[in-house]
Image 1 (cartoon, each protein chain N blue to C red):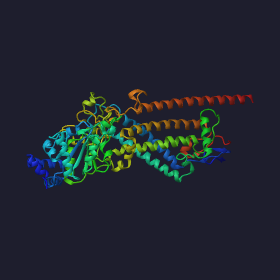
Image 2: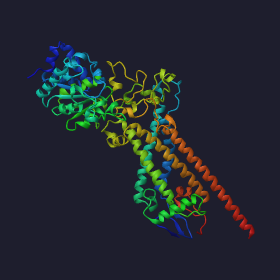
Image 3: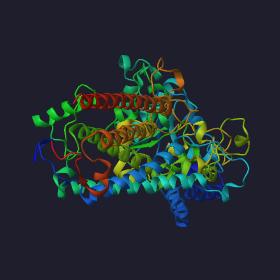
Length: 237
Length: 365
């Protein structure tokens, strides 16, 4: 099997199964998935709390909204640590572990792959190219939308969290620049809120694409993120 | 040696008992220990009076209005005489040339020693023509008086941040004091107005310890500006419980629920209102049923509605004044969803076609 080193495109068959996603990458992926659901739900509730329950007692006995926030903070911390681990793995893992952080945009073959994949999704090309890792379009989407989006939501989130410290102390010492950059805390809040929709839109497109590829494409996609092995439906290419 | 504070108080008929009350209350509000009260007492009895020059720029005088209502036992007597206001054109007895002469004398006599309190902003547009007290542009006057001062207190959001004069579009080019005076220590005491007790406590601290109080990275005294209104709000339990008022006249509002959804800026505002309160500890905005508007925060006029938790994020003309992050976000999600559905339908169609074609080809063979 001949594979382009940079775009991950299968140039010549016959193809055989190949180990693509190492365990830490897969673990990170599913931790992130598991954290995103509670983060989105609690985040939406924090931004727009539901109507109160007027009956049901004194504030001293109820802690609902605080729990919503605690869950949000705890999941956010796990999300962040997982991403940190993932970035570490980009340095020590195989070259597929790097593609979503730094797509090889300086290589012509990568741009060719991006173009071909885009044309395939626009129904211009009938046949999908085969890829051993992420295709270039997926790489750029994961870098610009998921990775940078996550970084943005983590930094703005930490800046909002930091407000429980005084300016110049604790977390606020580390994150007051965010409030200064945005001009106001309200702007940070709104940006954090919009970043959630950015990640939701990415997740929708991502899920659609992996299901579509799994059904219509040449290679396994969802299964690859489970066992790490890229399998090809037709051995000839 | 000129007279001490204590001598000055006694001369003005303030009893020793009242003086001691003031010392202990101020120590308490500064968060000092019992020894702090004794230190203040000692300082005021032995130290030479430090004169304060109080300048008024572009402003509404609400800081002065607040200050003269400082609620410690002897508010109007002790506070005013204590900080030994040598010049404050708004409330001093003399006026006109007499007052201006007094200013010059104070600058001359206490060169390098006096404290400069500034209320209001300097204005830079048209050479400062928008504010000319006593025939001299305020910006010029501020520079002149600040030259020989020991330290500057920026009273209120105007002097500290710019406040309403500096709000968009800022026709007078008003700027906070620290943009004009850059070579003197500046204590920012923001608020519109700041809390009177905070004002008098800061002056007392300066006199007693002869140094600036600890400031946060924004230049505000830590003892009053290190926590948000939200952190010490008496309605915080309702916030944690998820009990929010939806309207100012609903059941939640009557039951004293949290005003978060009515746009309360408590969670983003660093100030001491929820602990020190106003008018002799009587109340503060949230206690009287209105959300915090964040008046001690930078540019609070330009941060959108006081009554919305989620502000409008698009310019007017793009969906009106109700376009919140949620509406814009959900619309984008809906568009993405529709695009996905369309793409999926086209994909299925293409798949079906190619299958039929393959079948036809197969049947021909």
